[in-house]
Amino acid sequence: MKGNNVTATIRLGRLALSVLLLAGAVVVLPATVPTAGAAELPPGGTFVDDNGSIHEGSIEAIAAIGVTIGCNPPANDRFCPSQPVTRAEMATFLTRALNLGEATVEPFSDITDTVHAPAISAIAAAGITKGCNPPLNNEFCPERWVTRGEMASMLRRAFSLPGAAEGPFNDLGNSVHVDDINALAATGTTQGCNPPANDQFCPTHIVTREQMATFLARALDLDPIEPPEAPFHLISSFTTHHNCCETR
Image (cartoon, rainbow, N blue to C red; front, side):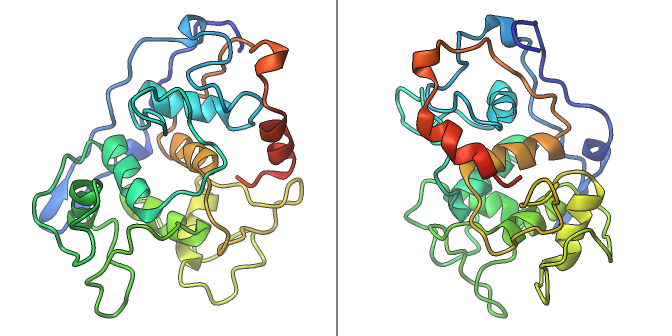
């Protein structure tokens, strides 16, 4: 779809489901989708460091609705696609994606000094996170990287996905996230981590920002936005090599 005026759209479906808040059920509306399409993007797209990534269409899709603004403020012309996602950053991505707003009550003792504290509080109020130190769960571990298993649980809660007792992956073992991972597989939010077989999920692997973009784009039912081709010299050889065996 390169060069076409492709608009990021959110289809009716899972987003018609409610996100269950601790205080009761409310309907969460997706972020507003602007009308900018691929034809209006510069060659290579919004960010200069994701050219050649298999996740670029998803990155552009979540950027179009304001879920991400970049990783190098104030310029924000980079996305840092291969950088791991922290739990604090994931909270902000989800808060923007679901229009949760910001909560003022901090439920965790270790988030006071992070700029993501309002978003962390918001996803806690929405029941998307419980904490990182069960059974006490009075900490969030904001700087800890998110695993694929943790990502699955957050997304299932965020989008109220129905559970699935069985799934296509053979490496889940006794993971506490097994039902959530299977739920993501059943809805097409994940395909696996070992293409083309894709019979594994790699639940303990760390989620990168570009993988997060694809997870969120699928969960939000966003169409990928493929920007016009970048000039050859702008395609990062590192990005292209990195994505030869990318997990999704």
